[in-house]
Length: 402
Image 1 (cartoon, rainbow, N blue to C red):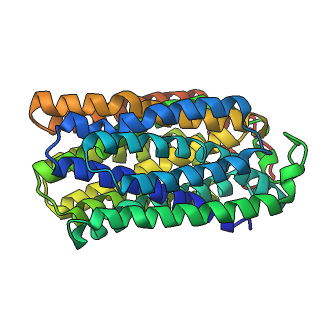
Image 2 (image 1 turned 60 degrees about the horizontal axis):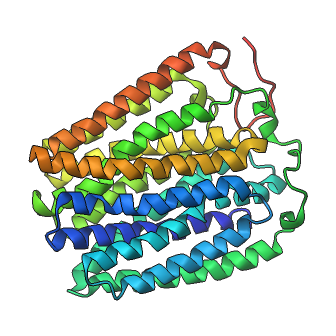
């Protein structure tokens, strides 16, 4: 069961990514303005942020499972509604419901997975890596499958939503069964952690706030890519839907692999050199996207960006879970950060693309934001000298103080 639960972030995020990808491409094919296409992420982010803010007030280990089931129901309904969405206004309307569903899934799942993993002596790094791998794999597969289904004919996009409705419905049924069978569901709230690997992090500095800064910059760059690339791919590069899907697949697919590799992470989450190295890849990728429209270059940039996004997502979740008594609030704030970057960034990205008449300025803006946030992270880690040689996040060693 402890391994099985990590299948569901992949399934649910696959549905979410599919909804956003298909509707963005459809809007571009309908000839909508870049700003209107980009703002799909804004329409999705507003209810997502509000839902995550509500989670931060009442989410706990007992009600997390129920939230997951409700989320699956809402996503299934959204897929069904999108089957009949023919106008851009209706497509926008059906973007709101999956946002609420996603907000009811990702913060509760992080609490739910730690509730299950606690009985199996899993380290924070292991849980974080598996979670990052799982949802990233879903975000990779969703657009990739959808890109190929959309090429089956004029109604190919409908097959995407049929598949999404089935996946969300089955996930909801299985999650309900797992929640009812988990003995931790009736345990006292905020139980002190048992003697597991996480003890080595008890005296660690609380760097959740730095994770929010780093992920905020990274998510702005990622949101620029997600919101503008479909417009650039259709209008400027004239890419096939499958090629666009491949680019999205590589970003999230590499991100997933990075998360899996980081299950055994030891010290990099506390070292400036690693944070800075990953950040350089986040700066390189947006530059490559506007250098050439050749698929090989686009794919290379996607791989580099996937390594960067995998690192900052792992960093974000790890530091939120490193201090278990604050984890329910921290994971909700994590998702609020994710949502907030989607409120303004798509509008700004669309506006920059339209007013400049070029996509280079938009992606240049993304690279600049990553540069600033990475510098902040590197400087802060340089100040935290006692933690330059942090303990293995998966060991029971004591924390060094010098």
